[in-house]
Image (cartoon, rainbow, N blue to C red; front, side, top):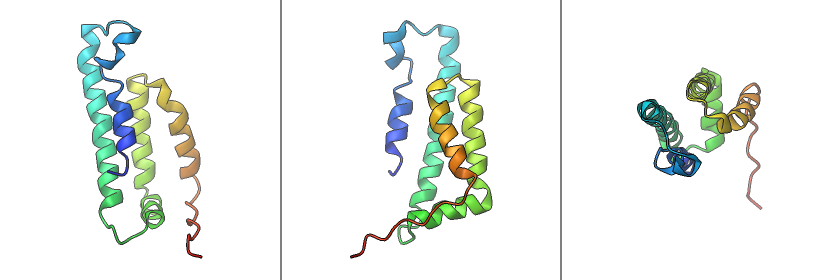
Length: 113
């Protein structure tokens, strides 16, 4: 799983993991769980897209996402989820992704000698 670290970070936001900040009110348990599931689903979709063709290089797949507008759509959905559930710690990384999405991805440098 190429994006496993993101899914682990999302899992860290579960109510059981947030007890160090105080008890999560029962009224927020459902919305929090749904928001986390929604974010995990988005990450899984993105991950499955990135691994669908192991013979293609990652930069080409990201370029296709950029060209079709799928990357912009994905970032829009992520922004909506982050705002709706007040996941403020994801606003900075999302902002950096948005800046990158405004320009085509650069070709990865070759590692051949």
